[in-house]
Length: 287
Picture 1 (tube, rainbow, N blue to C red):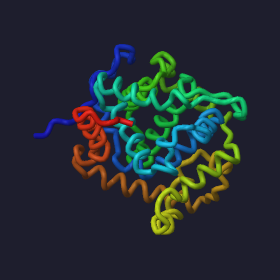
Picture 2 (cartoon, rainbow, N blue to C red; picture 1 turned 120 degrees about the vertical axis):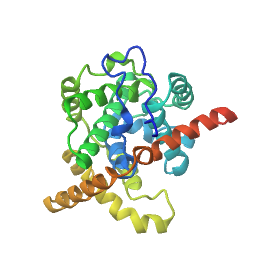
Picture 3 (cartoon, rainbow, N blue to C red; picture 1 turned 180 degrees about the vertical axis):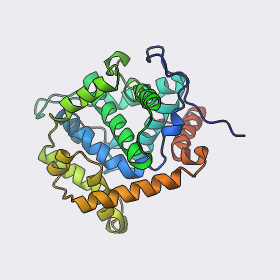
């Protein structure tokens, strides 16, 4: 019998009671397809994050210029944050830090930002956790209390794999919900950031046949995964009928995934962790 792939031991600062939590039972390989663009919009709806990405001088990390590379590095980050060893997390943190050093506001920037700001990293991690939880529950139904707590505390790694101190992660799910409600209400998508996000949603980084074939569906899916006020700011229409259709789609995919072996279901994530390990062994760039 195949043993489940368990996440590596978490940092000593991770809250007690989750050492035996098997995160792979709550990882969906399809999540990147269904929720990635909506999560990017949520992250960039914080003006400091949005302008940080828009004005970034690191061309190698821009999805509109290098869509395959950027997708690989982002998914590798998620894989190593959630499943990697402490050594792997440290190695990827160092690689990302090299790219982040030049991402800071200039004298003409509309807002002040710094990619090393732990409060901005907390917001990004919060978006990733909220989006993952939301999509999982739409596809598979609510987690029980123990699983929900385990998933939440494990998700702290989404921030601490960067420079966010573990203690900055809200203490429990109730504290997180308060943080989320308060900070989501402050979000605002500036017109230049929205223009960049529209290009991502419409898949304009790919050859024209790709965005013609999939762009409309991708925009519809993205709209359905957004909080309502961000959907409104993006100018994305949404109806009750759309909501019912999306619910049917996600529950159908979730029912299919429930019948797929766990190792196969998590393969789209673990494959990127294997790629990281191979790159380290060969001495290749990680980011």
